[in-house]
Length: 124
Image (cartoon, rainbow, N blue to C red; front, top):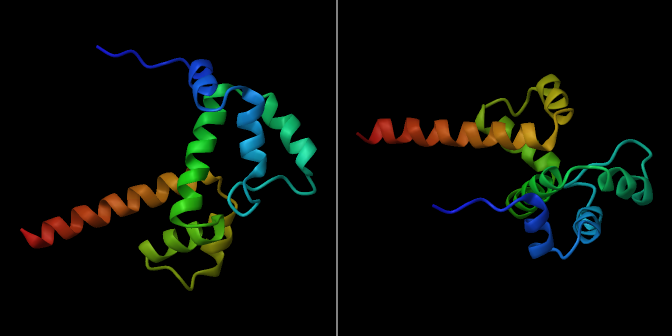
């Protein structure tokens, strides 16, 4: 039986310290990891330093996936719209743009899984 390592241990192994993890998150482009309106990097860094290690790790992992697969939050929104065949729906696009990265990522993952299930059902 393998035990899952605590978040602090994972942070120290992967980044060395919480500050380095926060620096890695701050260095991500604003298109991938949006900041609050008018929030500069110092305020963003200070806000992230108060977050829990587990939340920072989850945020970093999700941001890396989004950056590598889609490149930005806008392209992630486009992916959700494409999977739902609602590309031209501007109202829904603006609603999705207000969603968090986590919610968008979960939505696109669920839609892709459902699409794969439908395709397997058609093949059988």
